[in-house]
Image (cartoon, rainbow, N blue to C red; front, side, top):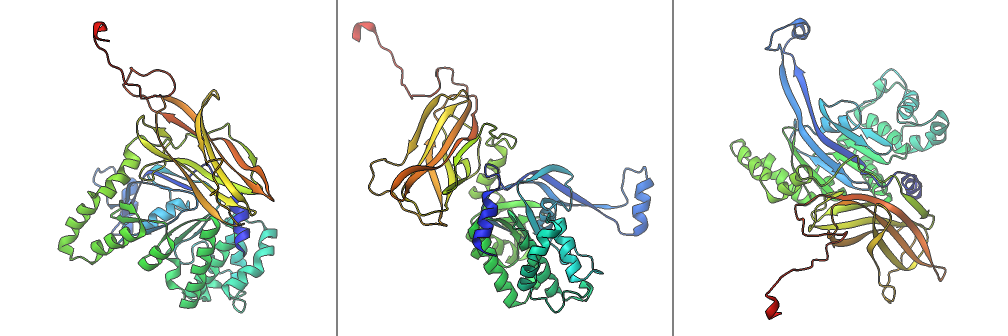
Length: 448
């Protein structure tokens, strides 16, 4: 399957929302020592249960932006697989919620979603149907699934006769066939042979470059650093650190390779680090309202280049639609060029909710250094600003134009691409829409 096929799938998705929003989820399991204890617990009025409560996840919050590749690492039992199963819809959290925006495909524990008595061919139709494909779509993609898996000679055998590597080959090939917006992988590649692993990694890189959001768990730290834009370190059901793959790798080794007597101290150090404080701020500070999306969005163009994922971020990269007066932010969006384009300009414009234009910014109209882009190129556009707006609701546009065959024209424009709120403050000395940073003073009229 070509990168263009993945790109065409991505263009259709709702780009103004994060791919995955995980908000304050917890998950616990009841552990019974004897089977009869489960029955006794059902009928017992005792306060002391017949089981132990294992907390797999403890108030976990995480946002995965569209087009990100994020790796999750941590010691065994840290909650990684439980988190992925909740995202994939196989488990329900005890509290909190998960929102997945887009078609997802998941590769979780070995054989998940397969009927062991069915043949490989029958499981293709079963599993692909669960992932949302029609029978006609599966028929059209069957040859690609077989070619990628390399299981032509075994496809009509029951999968309970398959090796673990054959399971992975079949599952991975089916997951790729659905053109997912979001791909979720839980250590599935660890049991494949080296040749197939390299083949899968190459396909994952192709999907990543085409804009698929990828979230995966792996103990192979080199794979995390090779593939990921960002990584998360988990331990005991909590997120200890969210950062660059390099930082996460070094802290993972610190935590897992230290003597047991030192691990509690190292864990506390990671939790109290400055990077971790930035992570906690993302969820404790009022920076984002997950239900807050523009309903007045209008798009023009988009056939020659495509703006995607317009958003506002804090200075440390956290998504934000609840802004604080005086703080610095970044308005950001991605552009994918679907045709060659020269002398490209990018722009944004802030407006009130009644449509009054407040101000904006565009690439210098007269600059001779405006960039050119080829078909398939994808870039991030950033506008840094300090919030000088007064409390209220505002909108922002996003736009791109350029020379197509020597003629300048608008390529893609999104009106009301972002909706955000500036939070109330306690300064009643400023009036109007924008704080002009006017300084007041007074002196005796006789000395004026």
